[in-house]
Length: 234
Length: 282
Image (cartoon, rainbow over all chains, first blue to last red; front, side):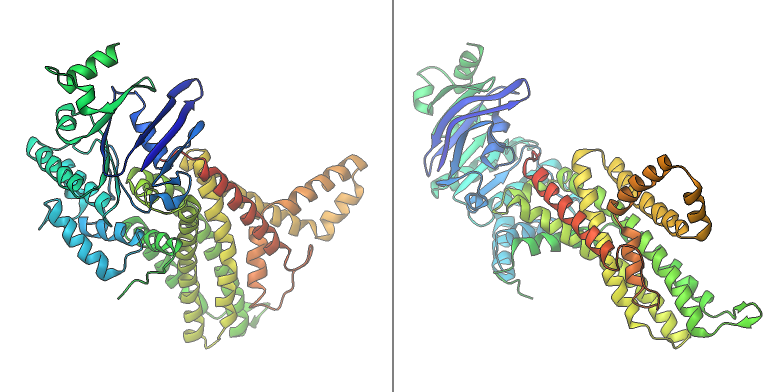
């Protein structure tokens, strides 16, 4: 579903991502872990062609990442997600549906389903400018789920959510995973990652340090947090 | 109302751009003020004008005043278009719409094209509405119908395309306000250059040039090249206004300004697409 081959990204003298290669299989829930500034968001941006790699190649759903068609079945939630404050949540979701070539009736059905899924019934017709950060995040996740994508790329999906919201998002991701959706998760919440994900990769200073299944990474008596600290601190 | 499945992505981006701009309070206020200003000039069309003791006929008054209004509206809407265009990418970026659109199966060139067409349509509609007010005033108050006035307005929209493309390109390379000022500068220099060129055609100016030295002659030739290559925004307006007046253009031929501005649109458009293709989306 996702394949990165020898990806390097340099910003003048800084190497943000250094010769990273890994793949994510269809139906897998994968977490990309690393400290701040490790290069996680850069990798996400390269996956979506928001920034071009200096060298190497990548593909989504078997299509080269430079082609817009590869994003036909991809849902994306950005870190610090922003939504135009002049729109209502409903209008925003409708707009996302239109971008996926849905007609008005299809879009309306989809939007109703998504509003229910993200638990925002009754609030969808108020302006986004009046929403809390958590509510904006929920609508961002809703937009990512538009059109039942095969691949979901989530950059810090629980950012700004309270503990109840985090639990709800985790339950939602678990149900999506059960439905066979491939999930690429970029998160700092290691306890959540440990509960949801099948496999993970740890990067630091742009270099891939570990890539394996969660069960192989986390040994007996350890938590993912222990492994993360050990690997990152070297 | 059903949205067609085959609606191309460019049309959707164009639609979003139009809706977003129309929802901006500043745009609505600007439009109302401009429409009121144009509406207030209706008194100028009703006066009795005397030249050398002779009363001017309605048609002469209408054509002279309409021409002046045509140029003022044309130049004014260019400034407003530059103001509208300068923040378009930044606003989309900060409000998350750029990432939202480009994370969908939409190519960057389609996004940029949608933005250009949206802004161009909006500014053309803006200018056409203001010109239509003048057209209605002359038609109702003075019973002088000039359908060419509206055609001229549409022709003048080529200038707006130039402004949109130039400001969008420059806004990727420099701060928005500097991009706006640069394009404003290009317009002002062009207008002043055309004014100087018009004055240069006078007998006095030609006599002065003939009396000056060979060195000055070289300078004049250099400036002539610069002048010929400079974006001919006023030239397009004059060409458009010639549709509703009997004057004919002189110099490089009647359609040279149009070709000049279209070539600029094409070159700047190509640079804009190239620049945006390499732009990092945040």
